Length: 155
Image (cartoon, rainbow, N blue to C red; front, top):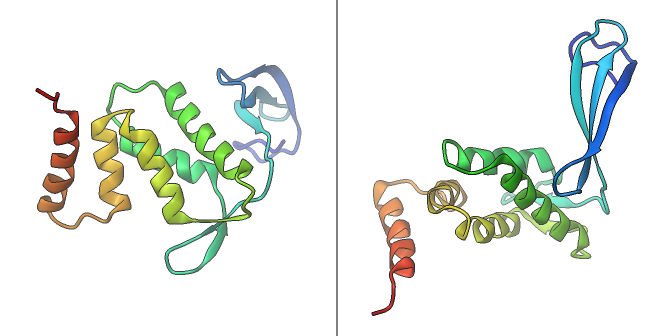
């Protein structure tokens, strides 16, 4: 594995263990040239999933892109990183086992929305603001009111 610090081709695995959810293998490596340590993850990929963007362009599914978008929505919230990892792994697993080789980006967005709904209301609204393209404060208010009404106890 190429060292991300010096670019040397060889590194030595110092530690290897499964992640908490068992969906990946975490490997601690050390560069044989500069001695820097870094972590890699090895995941099973069941099939190549292609994402069809809103404009019709196609690109390979990028797990890290999905992870970044969920992390941004969850930023500064009391949410454990392992929970985010499980959420993203679950969505990836659903996509890979769906039997479809192509999936609409909007479908992935809907899956994230559904997962975040019971996760954290603030993260849910943050993600929705990008996914649903909120342009005004009124958009936030209207969306937030649907959450507030759904969360009210029935009298």
